[in-house]
Length: 420
Ligand code: FE2
Image (cartoon, rainbow, N blue to C red; front, side):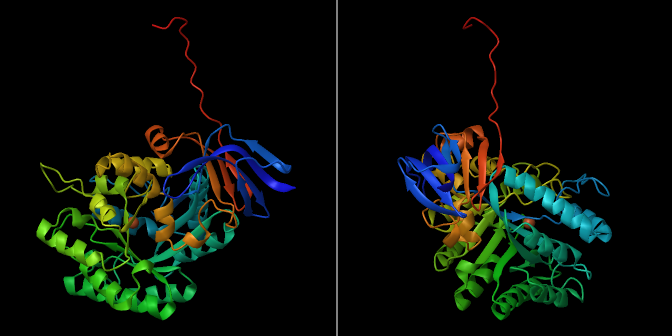
């Protein structure tokens, strides 16, 4: 007797092949996948040909600031820097309960839409480290239904204040999964370079992943990615390192960009673009032509680099919109990065699933395969293209073998009798 049996699904596998399959789950693990499984189960779901997919991966979000839009004021200029100023004011009133309540509420929103793996940044620029403490407690509280990674993120720079270097190391000791940074926001170019070296030293000392907010600016002279690349090559840590945003890459001259692409091929660096936020925050100082402000997603993907898409913000000082729906994120990425070829459209879906899992270094326990943890979603869609085009409803979310959430499919009704 299985715990859960999914009947008549169409299983989407890595690489895009789709096959009609039943899927059986027992004690939190996928134990059988076959065209027809006969054995009874405690719960059976007839999927009626809907798409079985691995869950969505949210590779970049700030849960500590989520759901604070308008507090204490709205970002009127829409710029990254006004957002940082507003957050500096809002975080004065952070409490553990405040952080945890908003984070869990956001995670629930995400999970109900099929997200079961999340990497969140936690601001560690405040001496209390409340944001970090709150997210570490949430990581533990939700671990039975969603996997949360927490990055120690020095929002105001590692060298922006005298205590910040100490705080980020304390964050490592408290158990952050990854060390972050923001070299383009450090006071000087030299501080930015120094911060990247410090991040790698901390990651090596504490055996942690790295995820750096890198060159999130339109300035074509912001060139910290090359420092990250050099450190990754010298430490051989590339697959454990992520460069988030890298929006300046979209503004580099081609001679420099092509040199950089050549260097990147020698690493296994991960990239995260956040198209919803990049398209709204960047290009604010441009007149016309106005830049899109997104990194070179297509070229990085064509080079074989691992690229994923993140939401970045949900209703916070930087972005008042957002619902946690990763198909919204992938759809915006598809449009802004002009990923409209058939393989490119499929790749956009992969950037919020398999590629995100690789970025999070969780590929060994990710995917709909016999023997893997039963984290599975069912979409009201035919294939990846259909899922993206219609922003398909996630009908079922199965987390660690249990039915976590379901959504009834919307059913529009046509009220005219004749065909015209
Ligand atoms: Fe971010």
